[in-house]
Length: 454
Image 1 (cartoon, rainbow, N blue to C red):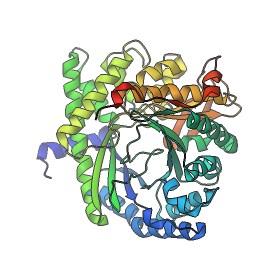
Image 2 (tube, helix red, strand yellow):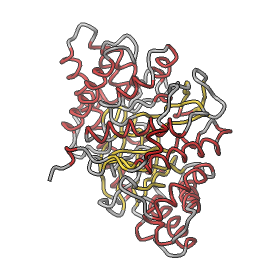
Image 3 (cartoon, rainbow, N blue to C red):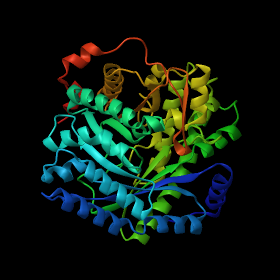
Image 4 (cartoon, rainbow, N blue to C red):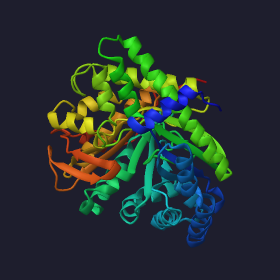
């Protein structure tokens, strides 16, 4: 993979002036051979394998950042779904597995480890139910562990019983981590149509089709796209806007693949994918909302926002696909409300509501992400919010997700500050009416007609 002098100069500018970075290098580790009928032995195997495989991840990432001058912000690990690995133990409390993951993450120095995961979109195994029941304690007692649950797919429909159980787990996680603003819920996400090569937390894990280890990269560049559009000017038409975003995404992807392949080589593993996602941070100038406003909406959430986000997401995907044959993960544009300064301001001004956010998720990379709601939100209301988002993914054949945070003691309009990458959230009003009737019905939402493609 070679670069022209012009590409090198443009990359230097994007790094130095436009906050371009590699958001994460995520090492996927298969834990299938760690299954053991004895819980303690399984945990010991998990710890030993992760430490062995990831012992050089941080140093390699740091050395590449120094050699190439491209910041690598996060170093993460993604493992096989723990519900599958833990099944052989027959344990009803899987918190010890989470503690083993956390200890390994601390030992190798990564930011987060994803994979405290279960797939229950069509039903629960005994181990799946044990994992979901263990989520609140697992997230309250660990620092680096992230958890995800698949509740729906286009091929299977939506498991409403699982949605109800998950909503209860979210509330219990919020209660157990109330002293940190329900921070545990920021490490917990549910999915429709999850992807198994996602390098971004909280949903990072690796699927059964992956190798023993694999290095996936998540690359971000809202600042680079914003700067390119600012240079383009307001007179350019929408085709020119899309072309500018596409060309910028092409350059960002090229950098991501270069870093990913070199990291894989130095670690002695294989390169998997580069996830080209515009993932914002709370830093000024690193906002997806700013991009939408440069495209032409007065404030994110105003009429036209969904179209602008659709244009942005599509152009990012096209640019990534032109640059690499290994684009994967989610790829597009993320809209985590608390992690994007422009989104935070839009909520503060009343331009961006929960209902408008849901509309925007029909065209973005994922779904309702880092949305804070009052701590007294009922389980039925949470279940309704979750199942609406899952339905969008199910019917449209796309990945959608919900990372929602009921903050104890907080009401609509109040703020909670988690600091760092997680940023600040303004508590949003979920409305006065619930979905108690849906919650009582339970059962499964049948798969849509378009699922029958064979």
